Amino acid sequence: MFDTSTFYDELLPWFMLFIASLGIFIWRFLGLILSSKIRKDSFFAKWINAVAFAMTTGLMVRIIFFPTGALAETELLERLIPFLIGVIIFLFFSRTPIIGLVAGILAFSSTVIYNQII
Amino acid sequence: MKKRDSAFKKGILTGFGFPGIGMSAAMFGYGVFAGEAGLDLFLCLGALLILWSMPGMVIFVSLYTIGTPILLLFSTVLLANMRQFFLVLSGMTIINIHSHKISFVSKLLWAHLISPTGWAELTKAKDELEEKELLTFFKGLTLALVTITSFTTVLGYKLFFFLPADIVSIPIFIMPLYLTILMLRAVEIYYRVAVISGGIICPLLFPYIGDWSLIIAGLFGGTIGLFTSYLVQKGNSNV
Image (cartoon, rainbow over all chains, first blue to last red; front, side, top):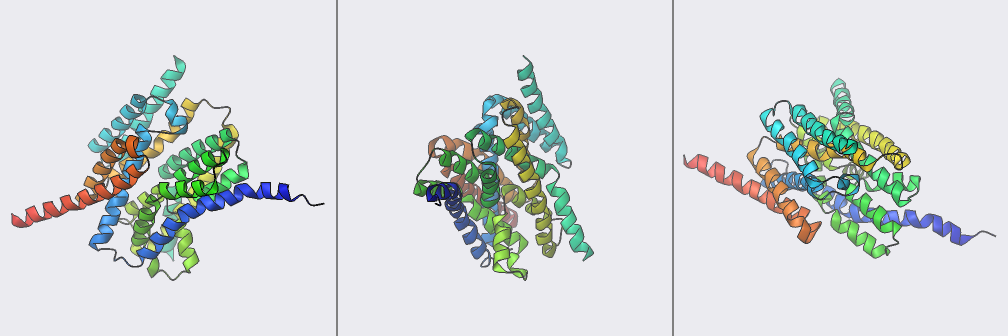
């Protein structure tokens, strides 16, 4: 006889994933619908872009201050100082952004590897 | 035709470059996290492609593994992902998606695949490509990002018990630094002010109001940016 409980057990995680995806889909759907009402060069479009710029930067800086997962295993200063080094070097060499990026990554990696060694 | 091919190629190359490395490093971390939590590999990959949002994925894995009720799972994901609204609204306006003769389902698919990395690359590409090429660029970029992140998610899932967490943190560090630098490259003064305000407000409020700090940082940062621009323009016209 077909065991329905096993069938439901296998489907349950995918059903939960579907429910979680609805929570994101709603925002994306609304974003797509409303984008048809906005003129690209309007004041409102500029504001929306500025909000997205501020949110993305906020999210990235938040990851440095309050990380989750593997990054949370490091100390705040171990993340913050290399991050600032990367940003400051970028501000000096803004035409070649890769210099700031590489400097920040090198500073962070050397701190992590140094901590592993000692 | 050639122009379209080059926009697509540019998207692919961008996706496999630093943006892809940064994003896939974060997904490597997600693979490690899902492996640690005991999630099935297919479900882990399914969550990556179906949710395509780091906060959404992390919340799903965390809450699913502790057996959270469905309504709580839905409302937590909903509240933590309001930023998707602004990213999609901004990204779809930049691409001018409604000027392309594609079906609504296709439009939904491209809206679904907007991520902070994808959106940030779009804001950069809009100054380098013609508007009608941006969708083709985004298709190439997304194809590369989906490929590389799927690969590194599986890699992280399979390798989670071999690697020390400190070493895993190195590739994960790339994404926040890369995207912050990308945001600071904005030329217009209102974007720059918005970037700095958002970067200050969000971590200050986060300990008190959690994920709402992101929405408030965005709304205040964006508004402060535009207000500053208005004041500067007014000052210039008075001179």
